[in-house]
Length: 306
Image 1 (cartoon, rainbow, N blue to C red):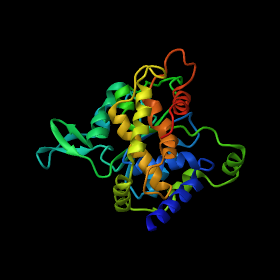
Image 2: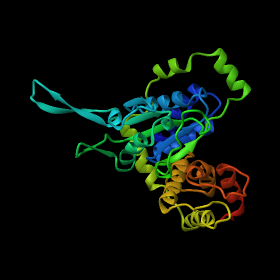
Image 3: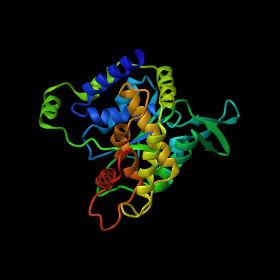
């Protein structure tokens, strides 16, 4: 019960900063509880960076922010060895990736070479610099923001990079009531700076253990396998989901169930997180006339419930 109260307090706190986006905020929290990396894609100015800052603050995690640009080099992320005359030796100076939360702001403005430097960190929770492998802090999350591909100066993330993100969400424009509150209320960045942590990193790790213990029945696993098989049928997408994507769906659904106060996964949990968890990994068939998210929802409608 105490965990549920802490989660409710955390969600309430985040919803005071990001007004009118309760569903997206819950998805973000579910993503971190499931131990996954988060990609927030939308036009500039709708609160992507503010949300990422608020998430790190609420969980009490040490974070660093990197503004991705076309001239950003891999060493700007991972760090570099510098010769120090007093020690008469090269000393490694860690880069911003050595944080519990790395905010990769506008990740698709960096070159593919720099984007690929994050792959090892996101998958292995370590970086290899100058032949030496160094572990990253625990927990370690990448929260990346991304502008739409049709904006100037962006590089599309490769499939291998997109697959490392557990979820991709979009905030969208606020409704009229939420926008009025933003226009007349306090500065959101200022609110983030004064936020107190609702949880500690230890609380987060305990909740992640609870997520793993959430029960998924055989019928539920059959349903997820039916969805995966549908994605591979060629009717909806050019290529289907990988086994790793299937594991991501289960993890995200377990986190959603925990946020709903249950110790078992229901089909509703799978359906609520499926578009955010798999749409960025899939390309619709050419004659579909729908985007990936709409295509995922159409596939959900076509696959019978257990």
